[in-house]
Image 1 (cartoon, one colour):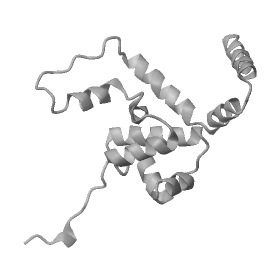
Image 2 (cartoon, one colour):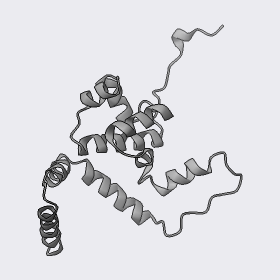
Image 3 (cartoon, helix red, strand yellow):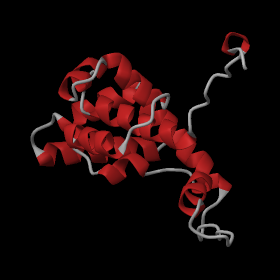
Length: 157
């Protein structure tokens, strides 16, 4: 008989897909200015459970993912946008075929590095504040002028 008191449990490493989905949930929640507590109340969960989803420590089932998408106002596919080509090929390829998957045409390591940098930028509090302020500009013409101004300033550097 095995004595379970002597068994050492290794900490579970979150699945990369769960981490990506959680990061997308956190990004969207921040973009719309919703706190973890507010999202928890809207989904009948505690903010600690939301934290675990956002870290990828807990996996969201299909119904929970659908519920979160509805609450934050995005299609379910939003949570999988921007997944790295390597991760996508593992997910799509697993169990569907014995044949090796061909890489996506035009996908390079440089694109992955660029998307990693873009993701870091999108996680910054400053970025979230800027995006929220931009979308609070009610007049679409004024909003477009701000966009053109920022774009022109970035091109001069």
